[in-house]
Image (cartoon, rainbow over all chains, first blue to last red; front, side):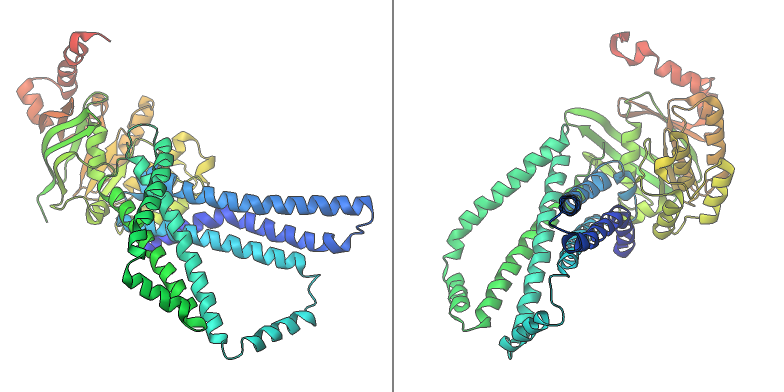
Length: 268
Length: 242
């Protein structure tokens, strides 16, 4: 059933974002010509290039702002608002509803990041010497990582994984705040904002208390091993510790959000 | 298969300090058309939403086909809410895809045929449809299923008498005859002729649950007349003051 839910959430995402993504790439392509093609010494050329770049930056900012609004709206309207009447009467488990929204939210963020990177590369394409220095640089990189390329790729994968789980954790915090706010009988939006601040504060307090834990011998052992390990080993361990921490917190957020939707749902 | 389709035992629901349902005990069989009757605020919508899983009861229990509310019960319940639940980006055809994906009892051909008879173009976006057309789409989605329990929340409220007949006709010609239809309304005269059973809800409590024939025979009056008598403003509202 999760796959079927994803199908509809992704369709909703594409309907909203395909135009924005295409616009961002098209504007980047236009800018790639205007930044180099137009005569920058003439006032007209400078103005056109300036406006074109301004529009591009505007679309880029709008893309990420809309992405965040989309993430919030798809959960709030889709599960706690009018559309919730449809979603919560489907024969699916509540965790599947949350998971579907989450996967879609993380996907929209990462596709937006990829679109941003590709668009920047498009603009910079005329500044990169693809035949010469670029490949020389890549060759230099390969040479310097010689023998450790596997480790470098692994660290990159770990960083990407950390980025994925970190994004999911942030969104799950938003979901939990909205679910907690939904428990209020009045002004649920305000209660959601208050819940977001409250949960953040509670987490920070817990982390403060956990300072005691971090001083315990086991953690000191891991820490010493991480920092004292030669080369890549320490870096891998550090990244996996961060990853485990992020996954645990995200799982806690997910658990409580699911508990509220399953046992406390009140679509009044 | 359980002979009893719906069971509510000591079911209660409070909104803050305000009770919406208080100790509701109810059993519904199969193949019945049941009127859930009561004035505004009597708890009709609350009861239906609990049966759908949109509200959690404060106390008591509820079971459909012998099971508490869960994905299985949702798969055999077809629910018509008293509000729109569509995403604006969808078309009626998208909704047919969605229902076909999630409900094994959804009949797409029947839905398309109903669209033709109701004058709905499935390819139109929901956003561009009038309120009346959206309501028709919602009705098509609900009645194109061969569900075991239809929960129809105020399907004829806010429409003119001709449209009421049309909606009731659509319901009666399309429901699964082995299933039970529960229609909530306070417009009793319009639906009395099609009802097998009537449930009177008053202040969140079931004050009467019987077959329509039995009510007529025992009381010597129509269900509508009895409803008016029980819920007359002077009786219903304390002091009779509005």
